[in-house]
Length: 251
Image (tube, rainbow, N blue to C red; front, side, top):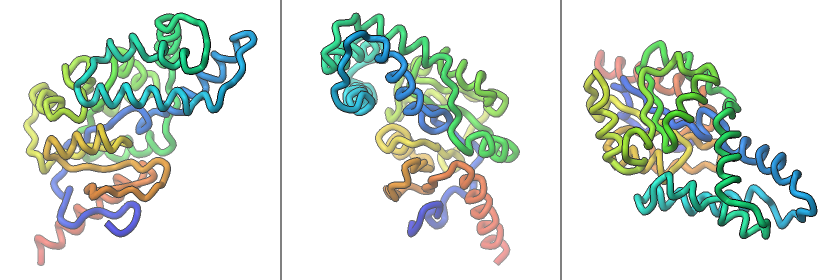
């Protein structure tokens, strides 16, 4: 893959099902976190900001999510300790579980749509079966998708709390396939997401095609089948592959 938006040769030509990550792919998780931190911590009287609040949150949250992805902890365990760790780092005497409750309540209502996401879904829904594939609480993730006006585009929602496994565990994808009415071969499935460790590694583990959403335009193609920095590029690139495949068959 030489440049952003290009596709590895001879891949993805038979795609029928596209799995979509939610946070930082369809909906803006990082933007929500920054908003939550600014609004919440401004209420603490006498609080002196110690460095970048978001960076402190991200570093600690990322460590826990890596443990979740590796199967070392559950979602419930992550939520039980997350804010206790972060508040301790910030030197704030506040109940961690109460902060977690506030965080979940705010996130439940958060529907900051990633630029290009709606256009992408509209274009892809005309030719492909779409399903969400997310690590997170089932009710929260499905509610947010519906509230954002995206629910109409999805036939299935595969969420780790309901599935029983988290990406990148191949059992997440095996269980998802068992819940569908249709049967799809590996060559007919593409996963789209922003996480190399969860979405892309999950796709590799499951033996399906991968589309990396390089949202920060770092140029990290990672050997994935497709890499884009704008979600609207996906439909165009898949259409190019279909056209190339038809020409090959006619040759």
